[in-house]
View 1: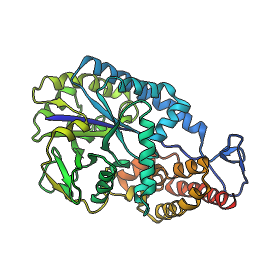
View 2: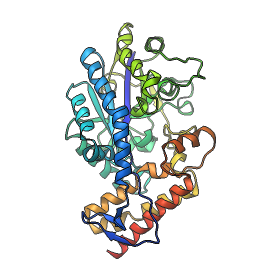
View 3: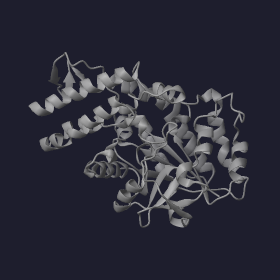
View 4: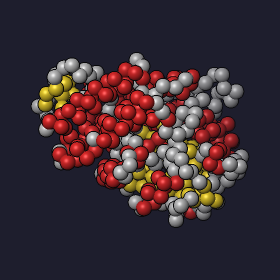
Length: 400
């Protein structure tokens, strides 16, 4: 059984509080400013990056490096969004350097995705999606070899997405191992995708992933506390070719604080896994290269790993979200016609999926998760502020 461990690493560029009733000027460095304040809240973004760097990125990367040196068989993979890389360079260069150290081990793979962690694939014109994939590859190339395995924003996946990604030269794509796609089949195999020639789908085992990502510190959970030996034993008993454990990197130290034992779990896991002869570690590219597909899967509608629905409703599930998204998409041609790199970057940053995530209006636990990540008091505040920014930006484009 090959164990493939993958982490999403992303921090959005959060917006400043913005009112359409105040004038807009151009800041000295060329960015659009609102009474001296940019569209994006640099102070807030710096504070959050500093906090999570100390709680998660730096200690976890240091531990990962230690584990890679101690256990030659251990391998891991990441996707770092371009938005995250930019903030590392501006606010926490030591974090980016720690990822470069991991890359130098030769046993860490960096997956491909959209630079801006955007919903650009959902645009009717796929050229913007392709451009953002290319931008991301260039950013990763500064310190590592970009992977031929693709991971779309929040694991969004469909037959059509896989088809277009295959045409860009990718050999693998990550997706959620959903029962309505798999039927009786297991996520612990590789699959081909309907309508595609060769690309292979690596499906997330959401139960075993969420046992760490969501349930690790839940004292109500029947398996609490989760220990490294218990988890390794679960993996050793699985049937299949591989098990894909995918989660947010902030699982370590941020979603589950240090005092929950999450770092000790990670510290002991490779050693406990090594006690089982049938457990091996592999990167996504290694799985794609050596494991033949078991069957064909059919995903006519876009799926994701977000919320109970596992679709696009986390970002486009209400009228606020769809109207904001439509306005953003409609600006594409006018922004690109200006051929202004700063305007282009601003528009693309406004396409970051998190802005739409904050506008979500759901019930029960899903909405609790949205509220946890949001800097706003409510989804309606998120919508009003975003539309204030987007409307002002649209006005600047039309007048420039």
